[in-house]
Length: 324
Image (cartoon, rainbow, N blue to C red; front, side):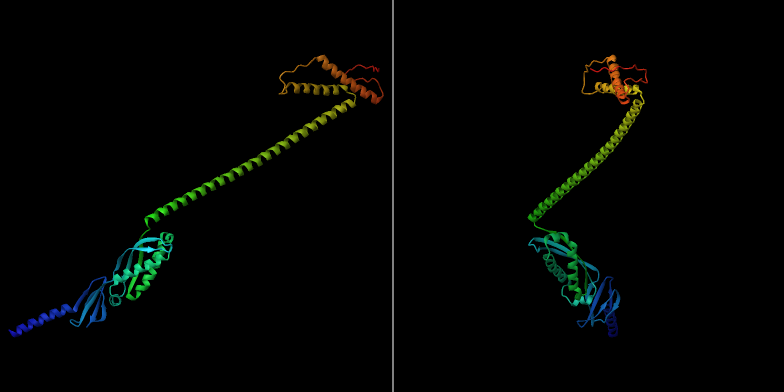
């Protein structure tokens, strides 16, 4: 019986020894091992063996990326505006031994470090910069906090500012300012549109005036050309009549004068400012006037040639001059 008890005790001790010696480390975790209270090694995921009763698992550290909520806090900006801001921090442990033995409470330390640096970074900026440059705030915080936590074996991957809340009266003032800015831009755009419209209208009027001037110039040129041709034709007709008269054909000047006489009567009759024309118009009077003009022409030619009578080309009768 004593031998049996001894064997049972040995078996139990062996089982206890085996349970204490074999350690299973799950994926995403690292275990630190201490021998008589001093750190000796880090166990990676998988099956590991330690010395029972001499070595023990001191800390179980998660190597996964973790998230910390940064509580809301008040921040005074560089232009003395009071705002409240909160955020989140994403970090991951890279060295289980450093995170276990270099800092007492890792999450609490990272949280306080983030809050203090948030006040520092945001306090150096104006309110407008806080509201418009949130990415810059995140980058500055990430650089500062990551550098500070590097001795702890921690990598800060991201820091995000979630909300920035100015006071209510400041929000109302900003709303009025934005409305004034929008009204200002609308007024400027409207004035710019009116100016552009006036410029285009002036350009159109200028172009129209140029085209009208060119039209008038072309019309004047055409009128001058027409008058020139008409004058040339008139001169040619006068020359032909003069040649005919010089050759002794008095009927030519009779026809010329009669044509001008009839044209003058036509112009008088068709004038727009005449509604009623009263004038003696007898065929014999017109013929008499034409004959008188012919007599004057014959008298002119007779005085030129020294002959008182000259036969006309159209069967005219000789004239006897009478002088008083």
